Length: 278
Image (cartoon, rainbow, N blue to C red; front, side, top):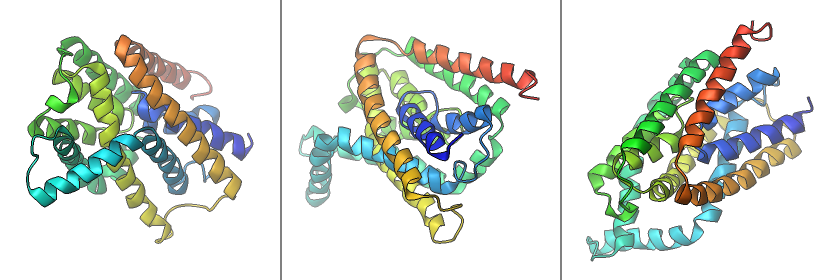
């Protein structure tokens, strides 16, 4: 298959599955395996950075108004050493606290965990684990609270949950939305807080991984048109996925994503047991 088409498919996959709670890292392993793609760039650190920067841009474009409020509010809190009853000041620091676990754990365990969980069967298993967590969170959560009611301890708890998503197949958005649901947030509030806290995490992860460009660990350098295809596809599909999720969760439960994860896991095992998988 042409490399441009592979880049397009991977970009669309990254953008959609980064925000729809079905695991982007898991799908970025499964898609090349399923189609038998062997090009070294598609599986390179360089392409991973490109795709993550695409989803970061999607977040910034969608939530630009929020960040234009939250960043000055956070700086004002530091200056005044007080929240002064301003919910935006508190929210800025809730997001900051929620990112701490990923900042601490990511550089230490990200590469190791991705190397450990790379086989399709292992990802199928973690897809099922993530499905069970998401289903239980939606079933047990009160779904009555808004995200500005979170305490700092609760935000830290959601951040710890997000750090678990370093394991491919778990899903960063899925586990952080689950954390919010377990704490009684409405589905939309849980998703919105998940996406806001994802912005600094994805930015930090992208910058951390991008350092490998300077140590010659990033993999082969592709043609610029291939890079642009993947980046643009991830940005556009990511933006649409954010809008879809926030609108969908106002009206619907997460059961559709639970079912998809289980069916995807079953499909992986079927392929593994087929002559193709063998």
